[in-house]
Amino acid sequence: MDRTHFENGIEEVRMLPSFDDEHGGVIVEMEVPMDPNDFGVILRCSISKWKLQGKKGVWIKLPIELVNLVEAAVKEGFLYHHAEPHYLMLVYWIPETFSTIPANASHRLRIGAIVLNDNRELVVVQEKQGSFRGTGIWKIPTGIVEEGEDIFLGARREVKEETGIDTEFVDVLAFRQVHNTFFGKSDLFFLCMLRPLSFDIHKQDSEIEAAKWMPIAEYEAQPFAQKHYIYKYAAHLCLAKVDGVCTGFVPLPVASSFNDETSYLYVNNKDLSL
Amino acid sequence: MDRTHFENGIEEVRMLPSFDDEHGGVIVEMEVPMDPNDFGVILRCSISKWKLQGKKGVWIKLPIELVNLVEAAVKEGFLYHHAEPHYLMLVYWIPETFSTIPANASHRLRIGAIVLNDNRELVVVQEKQGSFRGTGIWKIPTGIVEEGEDIFLGARREVKEETGIDTEFVDVLAFRQVHNTFFGKSDLFFLCMLRPLSFDIHKQDSEIEAAKWMPIAEYEAQPFAQKHYIYKYAAHLCLAKVDGVCTGFVPLPVASSFNDETSYLYVNNKDLSL
Image 1 (cartoon, rainbow over the protein chains, first blue to last red):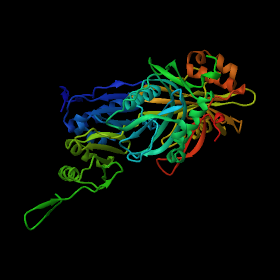
Image 2: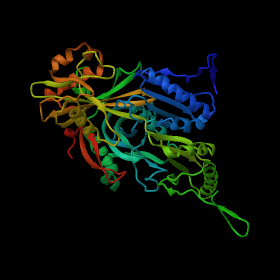
Image 3: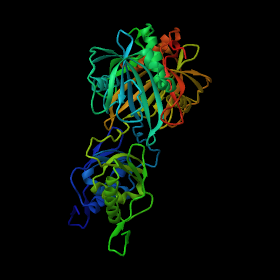
Image 4: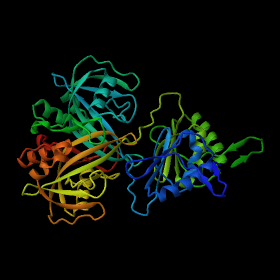
């Protein structure tokens, strides 16, 4: 136990190291191993102190190496908030009032890339894995937008990785929201239009069975594209695009009001005199 | 220990109850309490068996009541995958090959609602909490899209909750992606246009200080709206809309290829003969 005994018999228990967040709460980032029983006692005392100070939410971030402290935190009333591979974040709401603890991330972002050349041909691939494996179906390149990655950069990256083709981003033609795709979370799929800057295909061996340029009409004629709306719309939108109709949202850099980073606003800038 | 001793001296250790997922892995949903040491032994044996069976990812879902089993799973090599308030999901990748464990949810969705009447007035609010508290700034209603909620329904719900006004969804005028807004996760903010179906304002007491109809020009003239691009664009886009230019994406119901639920494709349907 990490207690200081005073001469008058009063003992003081050390507080957990913490810093204030911007919402009246405190954050504890545990880094050094501690005996779970000691941790429980110090945590209880810390909560009492924070309560007196009028603190609201208490966050505890536990790296996976300190997994032996998780149980003690839960015993003190903490709930899980979120987890990433190497840490678990727990949270405890002190006040009697309604909790304003922010919601966890709820969506994963995916992109589908329409890369169109001047001959009205699309870049299409056959995948080695997933539900399209072995079906012979030619589809547009798709992939997950990585954490912290901009949608338009994710689309360019996926096309480059899967087919070796360099592209310039044109616009987002549509997006689709689908619920319950994994563990109760949702998918947001962005259908993106890109302009090829190179044309030789060098396919990725690990994920892609085959890649080629395919005429839009041929792509659209695949029975699969008729059945799956998003792929059918891809062809429709693609043709609308070729025919000179602008339908999409273009990424414009704007200053973020959250932090110092540049963020992107996706908007139909044709009708907006900016 | 939960072992069956056979007459020939060979002992068989019980496997953890599991079911197969669609990607060559297994899912264990623990529900009944178990001694942590027993759990560790049975888990180790189960992994050996799954390995022989060629299984890939092993998922363990532990409700918060079984927090005492977390440490044993981590000791066997499991990492955290994600957590919600009342459970923790751990995962272990058996093969030597590259892990195809799906990424965790990375984004939170927010909406901003432009509710415009025939007098070119917007519904605006002053918030009791957050960074706008006490600033006197009139802003459009905003809020978090709940888990499993469609964007357009989230926009209608927030307007109803904050101002009591019933609305019809028109379209998404723009969206903005901002990184590192909370714990390394990102925000996607959808600027939505809605048509009011009722006009009397009944503000929400808990979150809203004041709510009213405000002329677009007056809204736009606020120094705040000049500085914060998203609010400035809101006025711009709003005016473009009033002047009859269609810029947004409309939600269209489409069949999902993931599951049986209806999902929504947001697209500029004016240029699409569907």
